[in-house]
Image (cartoon, rainbow, N blue to C red):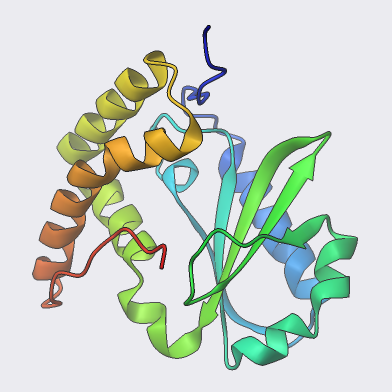
Length: 180
């Protein structure tokens, strides 16, 4: 029996535009809620192969206040999703039944040290690490792994690169696996 597996695609130059449109819509739907919003994840790294899902991270002053905007987020197709991460609110948007966007809402005080942002910025600046990461993602996807296996199979390399990126910023190593 063959599993459906994870779909990785070549970089799509429309990803930054799609992220910008999503950010604009989020700001309009919940005025004043988001202090920062950025495109994170592999789709935010020019030239990098990725699962075709736009990852966004938004910082808020108070996570409890973010929950009061669930109706506005739902109006844009973002619905709460519990995947075990305890330091954020996670919202998933599925267009036509296919996951298209993930929104990570985090506390503003954690913004500068968020691994996803640090990892993204490092890959943007270090082509060799981006190449290694892309090769690994293609290999894992070719093995028809499910989403959980795909994430776990990437962790050693993601941890290595993130550790190096954090050290360059004078930050200590912390686990990249965030599920509690």
